[in-house]
Length: 303
Ligand code: R5P
Image (tube, rainbow, N blue to C red; front, side, top):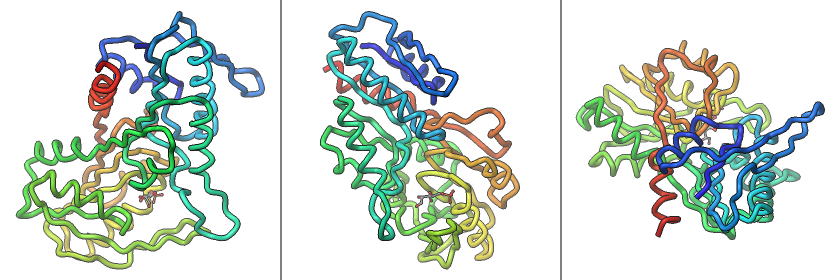
């Protein structure tokens, strides 16, 4: 097996490789003065199983192009199979036409990933459980929820004074799974409204009983608008402590400051998206998906 790390999330690629008992295979990524990239596999990989790790977070377009070129390069170099670990799958939120005339970005991405010859795709906490069905190639849809459940257990938070909260109706499935992992921790759901033209978010109300502590669970934090509005509403309703668990730290430029200054006590994310140092803030804890990813790869490719 040969493991390659694209430039979007080298630390995670290295950790996954280490968990597989490998080190990253050498790769030349040359950037031309106009920004175009040239990629070259620098090792003999004929008949090897190639594993490519590349998150398609910001800059998504560039990271996607690199992923496509990587898949092409490993095949031209004779790899037996190509597994793409795309911990965060960019452009997945536009999974259908919301308003007449829009493109469905997810479908365009899926068609291209298939066309460049990827045989197996591993992704974390996709925006919708239906996304794997859009692919013709097999997709392993992993989740950070078991890591969150472990952390909640470590913190000693119990069902008596804690409630799980989904910041929108779309996240109900997610909190039901987490609730099961936590022996039936109760949950509530916020009714969210987003203005499709401006992106502005409003938290309108809550369905379900609350408790002293609320754990908001979401797939990603981008602007921070969704969870900050949710936290404000929870505090208005008397919740004393709000903690956030979100898989993908997509973090727009202002998000870290807004989160640090919010009423939220702690923010847990994972390393599916690389977080540059300037986006770290004191309330932030990052959990790693590397071990889980490596185990999944080992189970499939080594059998
Ligand atoms: C939306 O449906 C997603 O699950 C997230 O809640 C959303 O994408 C987060 O974005 P933001 O942080 O910009 O509100």
